[in-house]
Each structure stands twice: as structure tokens, then as C-alpha cells.
Length: 213
Image (cartoon, rainbow, N blue to C red; front, side, top):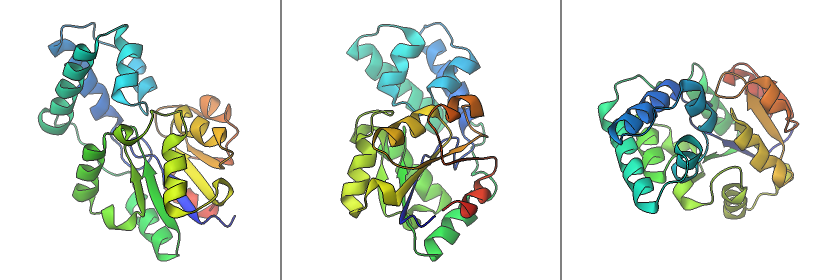
């Protein structure tokens, strides 16, 4: 394939942060005196923006409750939770190699932009990406707005870009605009869920991406 642009999801695709997200969300529920969701339930909403994820986990909530939940979750994830969230083996090398070979790179994530900027600084990968979109800069996945914004910013057509993600939300938003997509099977959604959205490929290791782009 001769793609010009590779767009990555972050959590569960480049960073092994699922366990930290799950435990932070469960601690948030406890602090806010809401029923604590199962690990499976939290894993299934990873990729959605928080404002869209909360009603799935907790039912109908007010705007004030949503704001309180968001603040509590961010405090747990960014400050209190000590669960390690390293990059997946090979993720940094894959990013650097693609960059060296002239690909444009972008991130489209369910994280808030401030959270994305923080992890990019921590991992020292920020300089390799040409465009970034957080959940607060667009409509939540699976709506394709963040992809459309990235394509417009970099002047790339959907056919010349590929979305790489671990959730059905990642692949669904790419499918909605006819963008090729590659699913990774080591994140939150299994091959069965990913295959619904007709990916170009499913890979079990981020280093296999080099064979498809």
C-alpha cells in the first residue's frame, strides 16, 4: 500500500493503558457513590469521549454530574492511579520508522487534548506527529469528525490515509468516510468486533503495521 498518512488511536493501540483506565473509572464511581462498573463494561467504552461513556456506564446523568465525574476521573488517572501505562513494545520504534520514511502521522483519540499532550511529552513522541485530535476538539468516536478535521488540516484524501486502532469505534469512524483501517487485536475489542468494520488487516503486534502501510 502507498498511504501518505497513518492515523493512530492512542489508548490500547500505542499505549498499554487499559488497566489504568479501568481502575481509574472504577475508583471514580466509588468516589461519586455510583455503582462500580465491571472491568468488561469499562473496557467496552474505551475510545469514547468521557461525556459519551458516562451515560453508558451509569445511566442518565445531569451535566453537573458529568462534569464532576470528568474531574474526578482525571484526578485519578493523572494523579492518584499508579498503575503503569507504558507504550506497547515496538510502538515508539514503529512511529519513528514511519516518520523517517516520510509518512505523515496523526493521533485521533478519546482522550482530552490536555491528556494527550501530557502523554506525548512523557513519551517524547510529540515531535513525530503532524496533527492531533482529542475528544474535546471534535465529536466523540465513532463520529468521523476528528478524522475529517485531520484530513483537512493535512490536505490528504481518505483513500490516502489509514486508521489504526484497537476498538470498533476507531474502525467504524474510518469506515464512515471510506478510509482504509487496520485493527490491532491486543487492545479492548477482539477480532470478532473489529471484523464487523471490514478492516484491511488485523495485526497482533504494532510492529506488523510496517507490512501493511
